[in-house]
Structure formats: structure tokens, C-alpha cells
Amino acid sequence: MREALDRALAGVATIAGPDDAVEAVIARLRNAPDPAVLVILPEVSPLARAMLRAAIAPLAAERAPATRIGAVEIAGGSDPSDVIAAVQFLANAASTTGQVLAVAPPAPSPYAGGRPQDPSDSSTKR
Image (tube, rainbow, N blue to C red; front, side, top):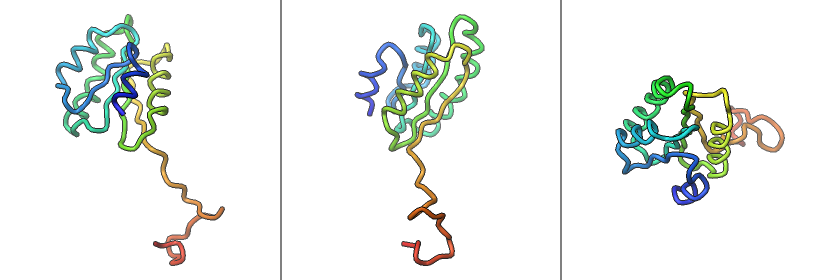
């Protein structure tokens, strides 16, 4: 996924992967032009992910009003086109800063055959 996002978001977003140091990513955001959008890949460790998420609001306050900062956190199995759409939304949302959008694959539908599944119905169990 990283290669596809690198190509599609070159010059638009900073991408954080599992090998990127949190301090280096934050430094890149501090120096990024407006808008600064961070993309957190699913392979980033839970600790690094939490630290990057926690940095967004303070960085947005630090860089305001000259630069808007936002982030897109990706869950495993997400469609790259959904990630690109979320980044473009943050990049173009002139009054939005300090926000983190989560992108995840669609949840399974609670409907089967046009009717809600009844958890007690053994015919719907696998």
C-alpha cells in the first residue's frame, strides 16, 4: 500500500511507516507546508501510532494559523482510494486543523438475504 500512497500523495502528505522514528515524522510535520497531512500506515506499532495521534492537536495549535495539520490513520485492509479521499478532504478543508480521521475497511452488513440476522437463529450461524 505504501508505494501506491507515495505515488498518489507525493507532495500532499507525510507518510509514517513502521521504520520511521516518531521524532523524525513530527519534525517533518513541523516543517511541512500548508496543509500538513500525516498518513499513519497500519504497520506502525501501537505505541508509535498512539504517540503520532497524540502529537496532532498540539502541532496544530503550534503551527496555527499559518499551517493546518491533520492525520489519517489507516486500519489493515483499507482501500487505498478511501485513504486518498480522506487525505484530499483534510488537505482541502480550509477550516479544519488538529483532526485525525480513521479509515477502515467496510464493516460486514448485518443483513443477510434482505433481513436482519437473528443471533439466536442457528441457520445464520457458521
